[in-house]
Length: 64
Image 1 (cartoon, rainbow, N blue to C red):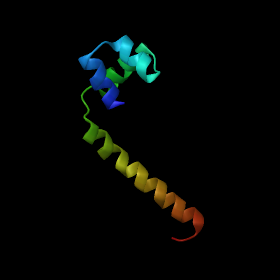
Image 2: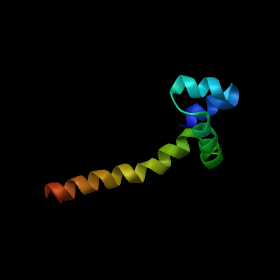
Image 3: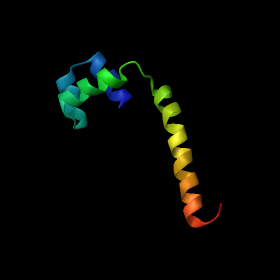
């Protein structure tokens, strides 16, 4: 998503939207919400969710 936003910043939003199969409105909404984030920021925000997923998986399997 952040990479798509960076492409849209450098080029034409309609072309980028068509290339990635999303609407122009989606890109504008992403820009409004996530415009200041970098790829590393998104990875950092996502890391706790991945850890939570694996923890829930272990609990369900009875290995915790």
